[in-house]
Amino acid sequence: MEKIKSITQLYDLLPENERILVDVLRGIIKETLPPSCKEKISFNVPYFYGRKGICIIWPATIPRGGIKKGVLLGFWYGNKLQDQKGYLQRGNNKQIFYRIYQSPEEINLEVIQELVREAMAVDSNW
Image 1 (tube, rainbow, N blue to C red):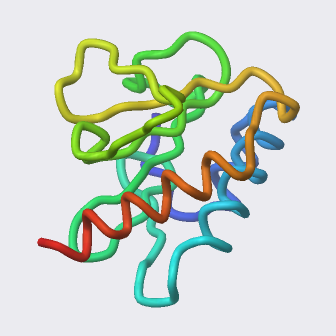
Image 2: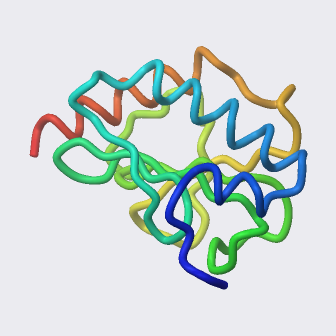
Image 3: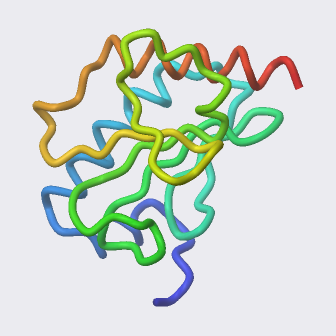
């Protein structure tokens, strides 16, 4: 797969269901993060960072994400989040915790915003 350099290029590669999920998740994250945090394409997917990594959105279409279907929202330092509602899955990675979405209806706006704010707080303590 060639190196993806823009969101538009990424969207052009994705099937409609993944494109919608990525777009909704990006919107929530961008709306929740302060302007000091940035988005870039890294590993061919949207990656959000402040001082360090905050979260990543990985559609199944993009290789090396470890998922076969849907779109993964992963928190780089998920192991440092309280996640009191137990929303995130731990998987095999000791650091990155995530949630995989198959449809927009599964997206819980309030919980994601809470996790993004918590991840920002972790990031600001570096």
